[in-house]
Length: 213
Image (tube, rainbow, N blue to C red; front, side, top):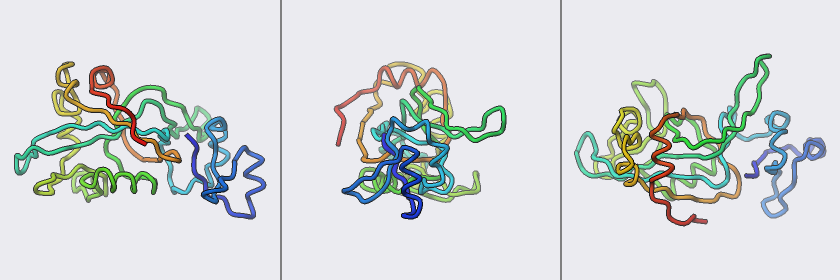
């Protein structure tokens, strides 16, 4: 779960005093997982402007098939998921802190992605891409229909009980498929996540093939 950092040469010695290491092959600095208690101290070197959630290097996607609300064709859709991640928050003294969250969840309303996650999605899930939302008045990452390219809105996929990523029975959760991929560095996103029994059902009953490197 090493975190890629963009440290200027003039600040490299100081960064290393904080636990930052140097990747000789990639010629870049990174924060090893054992030093994540230093996230606040090294945040200035995180390449993303407004980092919100740091996922583990092994990322999880949830696969499903849903009918497109526009063309009604069966359509492959995907959700980003995580069992463990770090989330930026504010403590009681109004100080920025990074909190370790240790539970399974799905992410939606994804508004920002680190470069390595963008590359990964383009390679593996080209129909999960950025589009403008009139409702949310901003750019977000959505599933798009493989047939007509219509946006598969997150509300349609996640929010209503019984929707594809909100199963209410183990049989529905068992139709979902989890895949695991390992990235060299931890990806970063800005997104909303949910809590609820549907996540327990997915985590317990969804199909789990071997991890993909």
